[in-house]
Image (tube, rainbow, N blue to C red; front, side, top):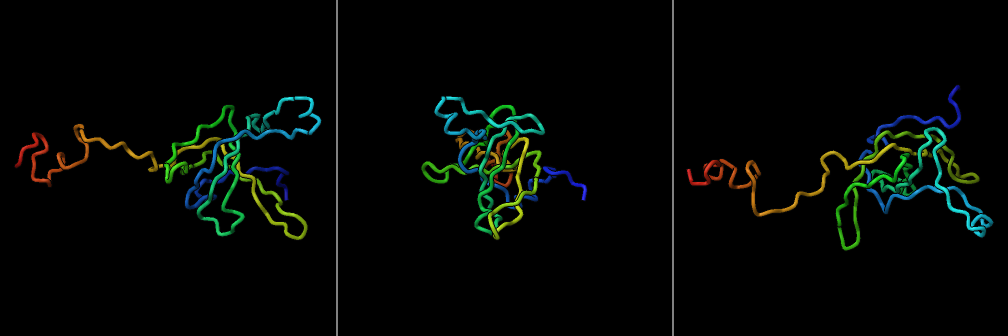
Length: 170
């Protein structure tokens, strides 16, 4: 088989996360290993750069609601970008707990061997080129008592018994 080592296969977001994904925590930089000696000498921590694209690597932890195995419920996706990606706005479900529905762009999967000893299995390294709010999952619209022209509501609904142009009863 002539598949080169480290081959990255393009994959659609919906294939990896059929029920979508929820971002957990924040976007963090993937850093190079630093030995005790390097830390003792005060050497700065360097961010890893992807060998294929030359872009900086950022880690995002995603909860996968479609996962059946406990080990697959939390997945790490590496986003390749020059600058730190900005996550989509979240929805506060409880005080201090924010849920961020997320969708990745330009995803690739590379097979890897996971586990140790006799408990090895096939896993994947997931990478993406960007992130966004899933289609149809924008932030909730702010509530307002004043309605502009064409805004939904009783004043613009003909079935309410009012003429939508002047607000008087028909």
